[in-house]
Amino acid sequence: MKRISIVIPMFNEARHIGRTLLAAQKAADAVDLECELIVVDNGSSDHGPQIARQFGAQVLVLPGLLIGALRNRGTAIATGEWLAFIDADIEMPEDWLTLLLKHEAEGQGEVFGLDLHTPAQAPWYADAWQRRTLRPTSRTLNPVQWLPTSNLLMRRSWFDQVGGFEETLRTGEDKDFTMRLHEAGARVLAVNESVALHWGYESSWREWMGKEMWRQGSHLQLLRTHGYSLRLLRFPLLSLVVWLLDFLAISALLNGFPHHAAVMVMITLLPGLVLSLRQSLKHRDVLLTMQLWGLHWVRLHLAGAALILSLFNWNARRPARG
Image (tube, rainbow, N blue to C red; front, side, top):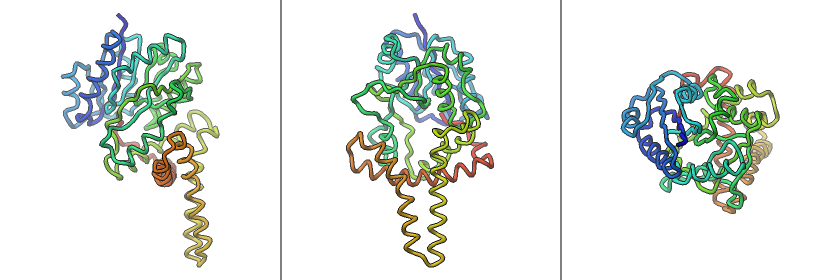
């Protein structure tokens, strides 16, 4: 029987880890795969490790490591031919492995991830932010240059070929890892025939903004690792332009030029509008467009702040997220 090793990094996820493990096991049972569950705990203060053991997972407790190192340590003890990474707050559908192993057997690709959605009870901003990543239903296989590691499936040989995750990245390690897989020749595919549920959605504005600040803190390290390409530079540069326009608007207002200030403010709204239209047109939902417009405006300001703070190693002491 073939074996799959599922590596799950975790930090204080007692609310979700049981659901995550149970769903992953059911998906493996559906395709008759022997399933090895490996939870790598980053020093949780809740009962997450005990719950994981109750669901049959091997648990490594490794406080103080960054997220890439956690995934690498879990993979180091994995014995499966297949390797999957799931975040501790993700519920995989039962047909997860049935679909993706079929696509791999048909030669469609080598590295796969399912689209994500939020449960129905998620607040509007968490739901809208997740919906922006959902792809058109007319295409079930979407070639991409990188995938998040909220859920990721590949043969173990691909992980070994690129040397695993970069262990010095506080965040963005998923982008770095899957970009290296793509550069090594793996076809990286996002699949939307079925969706995984993200139970760790942001339940407050403060949490949403905090996570975005954390996510945006990876830009400098990714640029140093992969070079100063336009693809990696465009968003941080855009966020700095928005900050500059804000500064000019405030200066114009203080110097008695309210009309100039209003023009500057209007210009700062345009990037968020373009981004929201780009991501929402496929849904044909005006409300979603307006929601994303506001969220992108906030995100651009957070990204500029994170880029500046990353120069001073902000986030260096934050625990790894799973």
